[in-house]
Image (cartoon, rainbow, N blue to C red; front, top):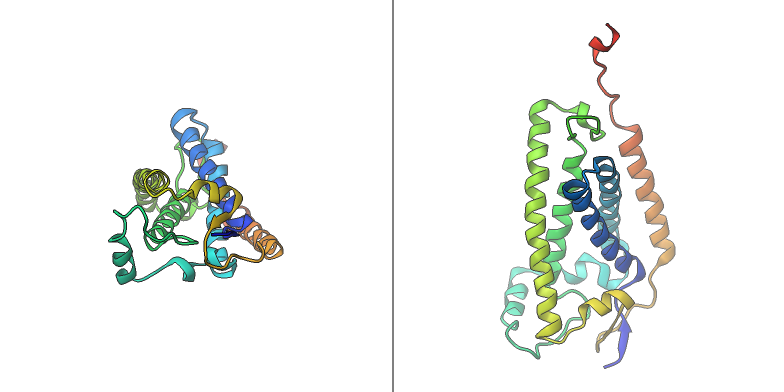
Length: 227
């Protein structure tokens, strides 16, 4: 079969930037104790998620949620083909992989949003730390840490699935996410819609700047500091 362009440039960049961000988030929180960088990278990661959500409606064919999100019947039918080495390869995400994408996006989004409301009890606080009560901060802190543990489990499952497809089914998923092309009888995409991607990136940057720098309430002032 002819190799056709399936994964557009913005989708590929999103994928590998998200991988880098999650690794950096783990290192800054668990290894180097660089919480200031942890917050900054978290804002960038949340912006990535917002972009991918918009790209899921506006991007090329195989980036769209409508192309790879299927009902339970389709997912179950596909699951029955897993033991076969020669089951048909999907040009885009397969029915199970499509839902794993949504799980990962949801968990990372939950991480990023909850991080806006918590702090390190020293100097670094999320932009909405002062907008909520102590009880809400405690809840967001619990969500932040629990979601991260669930995210690690989901990532492990995702990596295991990729290894399974590469080694057992001989489907070169990693290579396709690097150069964008897959051997398929299905039609490829004609372009990566880079101009549209640039417009959406500018929109996301504007949204994140407003949400992080303009919209948050001013930090509470400790009256004791004046005495």
